[in-house]
Image (tube, helix red, strand yellow):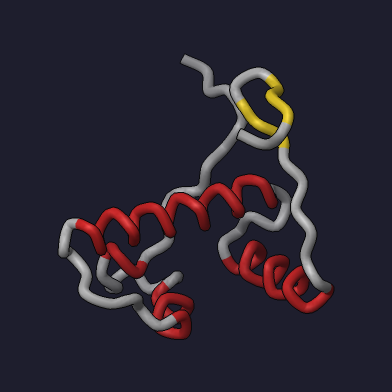
Length: 95
């Protein structure tokens, strides 16, 4: 695994073009994660893994169009597969 281990997390570095960075900032802001970019990236990876798992198990036949997914992000009536995953946090929770 690439990256530097720091406790229970792995620190990694990513590079984006200015355009992709603007898109990422906009998407993170729409999800309320503008101050937690790592959490936003983790949520995207989690969603991609869920889609892959569903695809392999035959639950979904084809990829869902991005515009449809974006429109459903804040729509509580959207099917669960189109709703965003819960944000991932790296903070310890108190018991």
